Image (cartoon, rainbow, N blue to C red):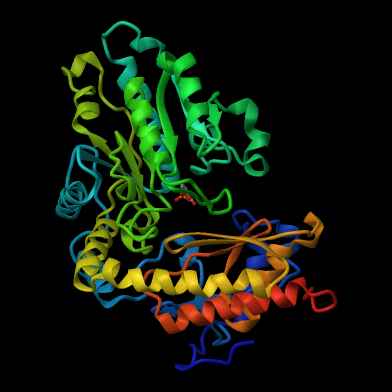
Length: 446
Ligand SMILES: Cc1ncc(COP(=O)(O)O)c(C=O)c1O
């Protein structure tokens, strides 16, 4: 267990009362509540940099960036100040029929940063909604085109084991049976191809390309599938095949965007510009819910027309383009520049790779370590599902002072880009000890 940390936690919160109320009233996402209610978990009270503190004053490295979204650390003075300053002006104002400076400035900055040709920004509030928006835009764009055959383009291609969020459109182009199979009767059909298999995609497009509106991919690495890394050149080949068959390409960079893979956007590794780009998570540095779907001018033009032609994109959420969130996003981009985050990330990625190399040799339970930039999946092998081995590792890691979260038997590490080399070393060491503890017979925690 990690030592109680300095400074002392507030005397105010009564952890026992909070725990009781949590168990009585909360329903946590992706959580079997039956187990949750009998298992004590930390109640996070505050954070500093890349460290989280619970109500008992224990400290933990934020090993999964608060669900893959924290970038520059918690309570970053620049981001905090930007939100406070915006709070003194207006916390929320609608984007339907009105506009505001933070949304305008951010849209302009995003278009400058994004792969070439993405010139329009449509805001929403989560990764799932950014994907819904892209799917609907692609569908409506084809529906509104006048050339022969465009009305046949109603289908989507996605990757096997894809994850694009939990709303029904996103689930329709997802492929993680455990999460998605139950909803099958509610979903629209999509063609699924094996990631990395160019020939299979080429054959499908040859056969059905004229019926495809868009293909959606998580570029370079499929996160929720268990950090599955695609072979180099695959994304480029996907872009070329989509172009050859007139299919729109949607890149979902909800997980990979904002430096996660070592470049600002994963698409940059292969010089690919999609027609639609989905961003969320790291967009606000992980501070506030905000998402953006970036579109090319060609897509945007397809929605223009007289009012009574009804080519409008009839979609918009209440908190779309929230000013506080946009202010946080602008400050996040400022910090990327001021702190040269991507430059300073490169040696940390090398260090992470070197630290992980030793894991496979040291720990017999480790079947494979997969990594792309600062996204890591450590797959453990040989355990029955009931052992919940990934979960046991995270419980052991917590006792040692790190918060991590598995995907089944894959232990995921996804530290904030701002993590120090020292804490990166600690995170990997804690994870290794937790794997050893949880996978050694007799040493397993309950
Ligand atoms: C690639 C990808 N797309 C979409 C989403 C959904 O994002 P959100 O949870 O913000 O809806 C996620 C979430 O992990 C993701 O990894």
